[in-house]
Every structure is written in C-alpha cells, then in structure tokens.
Length: 381
Ligand SMILES: [Zn+2]
Ligand SMILES: [Zn+2]
Image 1 (cartoon, protein in one colour):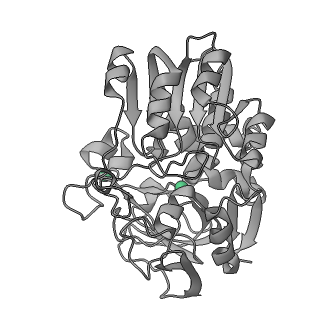
Image 2 (tube, helix red, strand yellow; image 1 turned 135 degrees about the vertical axis):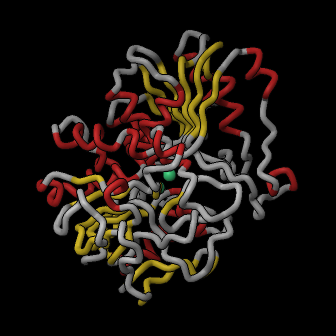
C-alpha cells in the first residue's frame, strides 16, 4: 500500500510499504478515505522527537471497514468509521473510567501510558496517512458515522482529534456559559477550542496568534482576534476584560512556542496565560509539551523543563488541567452536533489533496505558509 513515511527531519515521502493487516482477533482493517496532517505531526516532521525513520505518520483518520477480526462484534464490514487518535484497550483501570488517552496496556514503553497511531513515544502503531490502517480493539475504538458522513468527510474526520481536543481544552479550563475565555494559538486546535467555546455559550472568546489567515478564521466564527505581533496579548486581554483578566484560558501552542521575532520560548504562552487569566481562573493545556526534548536550544528544555511563573500562578489561586484529550469522552456527542448541523468544523480546511502530495503539504504547513491552515489528504485520490 502507499503511505506517507517519515524519512528523517523535514523529509516525508509517499512510498510503498507492507499492507496493513489484521494481526489480532480484535482488530479491524479500515480503508482510509480522509486523513489529516496535524500540528503535532510537525514536531516529528522537524526531527524534534525520537520518531523512527520508516514509520507511517498520521493519527487523524476516517474510512470504511473492509475486514474484521474473528471476535469483532459491534463493528461490521462496510461501516464508515472515524478513529480517535488515542488507541485504547477499553478494559484497563484508566479506559474503564473514560481516561482513554492514558490507556495502561497498549504502550509498551515502561512508565508510559497512552497509545496513538503514528506518534513518537506512543507505541509501535503505524499511522493513517496511508491507504489502509489496522485498528486494534475495533469494537471499542471505532466511532460509527451516519451514511451521510461519506459526503461530509471533512467535517467528521475532525472527530479523530482536533474537535474533541479543542473541546477538551475548554473542559480542562472549566468554561461555563457566559464566561470569557482567551485561547493562545489559532492553529487547528486553537480554532476548535474557540469554536467549542462559542458552541458552549461563552460570552467573549479571545484568540491570540500572529498569522493573519488564522486570525481571520477566528474572527469568522465570532471570536475577537488578538495579533501578538502588533499588541501585547496580556495587555489586550486585560483591556477587553476591564482589567480583571479572562475567566478561563487555553494553551493550544505547545513547547515550540515562538515570539513575534521567531525565537523559541517554551514558557511564553504558559506565563502569558497566568498573567491574562483572572484570580481563581482555570487554564487548560492541550498544546504538546514533552518529557524530553533533545532538540531544545538549552539544557533545561532538553530535559522537558520550562521556567514557569509559579509565584504569580499560586498567588492568583488558579487551576491548571493538562494533557492529551480522551477523544472517546466527547466524540459521540460532537458527532451528533455535526449530524444535526449545529457544528461544521471543516471551516478550517484550507487544502484537500491526494495522499501523493503529502510531502508538499508537510512543507507548506510546517512553514505556516499563508493560507495553509489545515490539510486533509485523500488516499483514494
Ligand atoms: Zn492531531
Ligand atoms: Zn486501556
């Protein structure tokens, strides 16, 4: 089969690899029809992780089930399914309580919890930027979609990661209807966090970024864009909240955070959040931070540590929630919002390309070239 393969830093090739196949009785085999490039793929693309060369990328996938293992019961051949980026067993202590991002059985690395498709440090599973994908524990992991989903794949595929992850950011922050929220980062996840906040009835949604194309999208859904290349974002948020600070804040950038000159400061958004969220406010952190970052510019960063403004955070009595999204905690209800016409997350899609153009897509998306906000790939052409 054809697949997008990591060949080394800034080098992705589409090439022939062995076909994905059923390996265990609980697996399903899915023919992928839509798969996205994610901002978190870029950490691997840039060589900032220990992702192995030769592996297939991709953790945001939708397709049709073409074969099932002997013990798969609920899912049938022909079903159109969206796959959560988390792969989870469904029976461990964490899965059992809905914390599927922290599955205790599927990551073979000692001391690690959580598994994902085509992701550094999250198990040996190949990714979905390919013609076929093996889905472990298919009954638990497949989200079945309505028939109409075939015509609306660019909406439904966002259920694999960024729509639930954006929603999760607002949950971790503790957002309630009528509150204000500031979201740092208007990449796909930040835009989905803003979109989720709008759906949940936030009174004021502020989005901080410096890319005009992304800020325009934030504005198009009713958020207030804040361009940090022009304004100090903390001053701006305080001004917009009568000096009080936002009720809630979301971190949707991660450790490769840049200032307006392009210099990397892994602590920049975290400390800006502490300053721009109110006393006793909540902060949700879904941007990726890594326990080790060998490519970091300094020793602290190499060990995954950041200089965090603990004093002000403590003095303000704020709360932080962190980590990857338990996609299954939200994906059925978010699917229903799409089905009912109440959510249309494909508004962020800028490019729909055949899988063969994955190398160019990675290049443009990684450079944050103007207008490349979200790429969906079609392995079927
Ligand atoms: Zn993703
Ligand atoms: Zn589990």
